[in-house]
Length: 372
Ligand code: FAD
Ligand code: UDP
Image 1: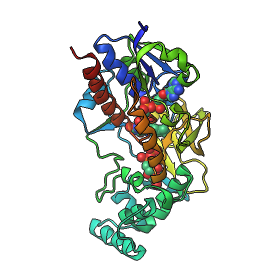
Image 2: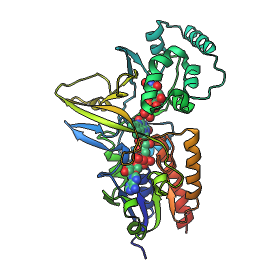
Image 3: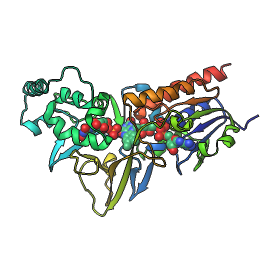
Image 4: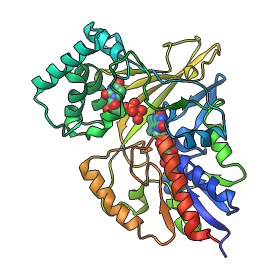
């Protein structure tokens, strides 16, 4: 008789949502995390009375009403709408790419003229069917926007040429021929009032959690603790990199407390020139319409991932996807370990996708193992 029904490795959104589903049917779970806190990348810290997104800007958005109701059952969300700005050579542009951006760049306010301008640039570039991020970006918004707002940002974010990056990354951003600065097309959007920790705390309520514990360092000990394991860490590390290491992009966050009440007037400002070493500056209080006397900012510096660093972004190019599918084939054969989340599925998931995926897998897992 093992002391727990399920061991959950990782207290990020995937692990927490899974643990919550099991707790609801009375299963005994142990959640462990190698970090010193729960929540994974959605974790917040408090400074100057402000919720700090410890691992970069996190804006919740979804079009799935069920997912929205689910998160709101743990914590109410505010009405924040993400409208980042981009700075290129000292000039400010609106994002995502919309009529405001086109007006700022070309002085055009007629959507039809803008479409003609883009079409002419796409024709000149000779792109028919886009094969990589550069071609995809140019075919969506033309060469001027690509050179001003995409190329520099993307190449520093990912550490490689836009020609070597998959096209889907740039399709995350809407392109609109209306004057609308909402970064997302989804129906529901916001930030948890009181911070993301309230969501994690709600999900993990009454569940045993041990932080500062690395499953891969104490594998024998933890394997003996539970009948089943849900693993949300990097899939290549689970298999000791036997097919080679998957590529990730990491980040370094530089935080600064400022004794002024407003630094940049917006929660997210992107710096799209290659020469500026960071990609964006966050001013955390603006995610929550904060009125505190001081402010806290974070600069995000992209960096190459090396062992010991946090693997924030999977690099889903053809080569890495192929290596991943070898690991996945092994994972699918595991008799008592289930894999999920951004790192184990090796997918560029947003929060709502992680939640939806964890809820579906937990339901299947419960039906398979505990159906009466
Ligand atoms: P994680 O949060 O990474 O959790 C995995 C956990 O497993 C971690 O806590 C880790 O410490 C732990 N772990 C790993 N290996 C081990 C081990 N061996 N032993 C014990 N514990 C282990 N999504 C949005 O919807 N909107 C956004 O605006 C947004 N912005 C983002 C900005 C950045 C900079 C990043 C990096 C991500 C962003 N995301 C955003 C994505 C979002 O963070 C993820 O979708 C979500 O948090 C992933 O949850 P997860 O549980 O899969 O992974
Ligand atoms: N991007 C860009 N310029 C910007 C913002 C984004 O070129 O000002 C590109 C870049 O390639 C980035 C991708 O769009 O990696 C997706 O942006 P998103 O804001 O979704 O990235 P995340 O928040 O996940 O880092």
